[in-house]
Image 1: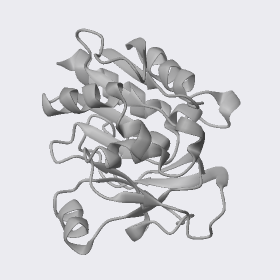
Image 2: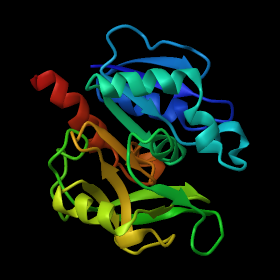
Image 3: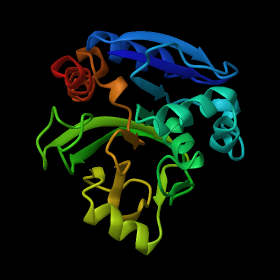
Length: 222
């Protein structure tokens, strides 16, 4: 599998994301946010966590208007895969590739800690390495992780089995404990917790490793 990782001014998890993908067997290229095109033959575009454009007001919206994100939109419209983590999840909602919005945490405090993360569905390339109902230990680090959708969209997410992860104990006020959602074609995943920070024993756990292994494995099997 060939993957591209978009880098914005202020990104701080881009190398971690690339490492997670490479360890799973992917060929990875970094893409600067001003690049207008993705590398040829890319299967997956990853939008990493961090603090794009300083994490100031509507940083995800600013990032979503970068040339590389316009290329990301075209990639997804062609049926390509995309993964957004933390700030990257915000970018995917701002580009409207995923529904909903990320607001300030309910307690208005920055949160940085491991959380229990429940796998809501294993029916996607991203979650195929887990069992539905399995509880993972994965870190969060965000100030704007309070996921919101309206009633109609929430019903659609439930009805179409598009909620990928939920929090075992909701840390930020997200609606229905949602921590990650899938697109309608199940080829785009956005999530607030950081699987790329849970792939080594030195990280305190390796529960994030199966996400990358399952994703890359899907392409090997194909």
